[in-house]
Length: 217
Image (cartoon, rainbow, N blue to C red):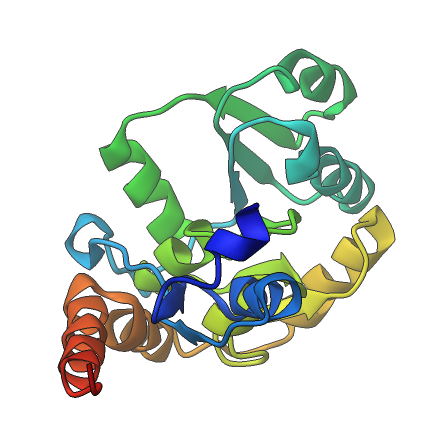
């Protein structure tokens, strides 16, 4: 029934390439990709980074925060984790002294920490994912699992570094690689604002609506 009704729309718009691929696979329909935006004005840009890394996520199993904690336990590098959820107690029991779980923080504190972190770590497989874009809007590079939505939002070596397995050792290797890159923080910020701001989003929507209005009835 779902497949039959899925044939009725004239146009599909997906929020990422991976979702567009899923639409093609199951519905046999082409989809235009327009990445979801963020309000870039809510994120602070800073060229001055402090000596810590950041993870910001709901503490759920699929977010794979546990693999991030294990990687930092081994490296002994400072890690700050923002967010709450059912995994918090287990993560706190695993974390060594270099790992701090702050729980829920205000939007202002989150923006400040994101702008000051050396990098933001993302280990989940997401259809899109806003955290990498938010990090870039803060001028902060991203170290992410290289599948899903981050393939739309990150440029390896310029805005972030990918790891190819959701394991502590893969994260460790990516962290070491990222630490050797001289990041252009202003360029990272520009990439986010140019491509994933609300202005960029609505410009793309307007363009598609103009093209749709020209379709024959």
